[in-house]
Length: 353
Image 1 (cartoon, rainbow, N blue to C red):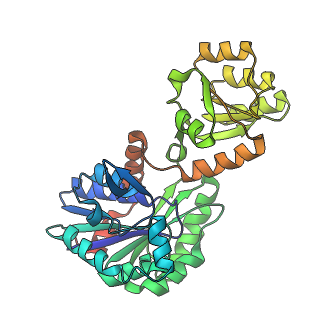
Image 2: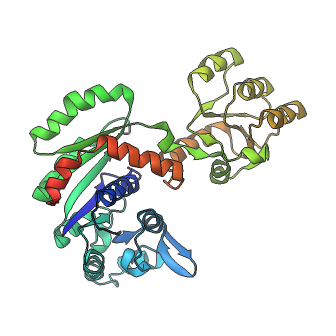
Image 3: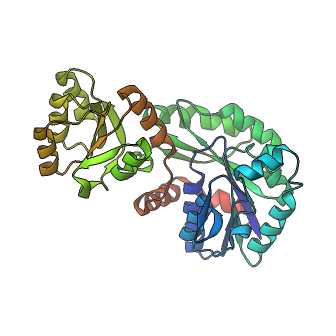
């Protein structure tokens, strides 16, 4: 029986995408796959029971059927954290070991999902590095590109994990950094004993968000074309510039929400006619009737938010980086990215499958 811990150098790096893509692929190949997430950081009550929301959704996709306390033996509620800070939780590893024994029984491979980075959970002695050693797992560590890769962190993890490190995945690598990644960073890591099992290119769809979800997360409301609130936003463009300059940038960025003040009807009209997925009007300023009518005719939603353009843009940047993998279309796309870019041959060898 093989066990694989899927961790990362930081939160929001693509762990759930890798867990689901890997699990679905191994199931398709005929392996019996188990799944658990030892430490849950997103507590949510579902049907009267406390789950980790991420683990609940992953289990649904993989069609496993563990009880909440087995699927996620440690859920980091506020109460749990307070007790941990007061040294009142004891050794949580005992419940994690029991859960792993239950889930792994009769399975060919058990995937153990990490929470946050590999050192997240250290405060309660349930960080990823300890879990890997205690359960004698192999580890697959994801490093998501965000202006640069965390190669120093990967080198430290190699020292901490030793032979437990099956390999790493470099995720969300921007096109302009792909050449340097494959020709410089990958050989550098391999020379230091770190297997790079996959380099996954940036895919705009994976960071996309529905208009309705965007409005909710920004604390705004959709005021027109409500029936098109399921349109997808992949990026954003700030429309504070002169309309001529705006048009130049707008043509280069497809599926971009336009963040602009409610009084800039010239920019509103260009964005609507150019088929932007939605407009986000800031400062709690509503558009004029001509813009509202055009929005309904062209079926392009308009969101109104209270905050200023700069604040909304910063929020948008964070949202697109940290939006959870929930929509079926994104789950399918994530699975395809894993299938196309992960070296399953080497991974199976590392797991003894």
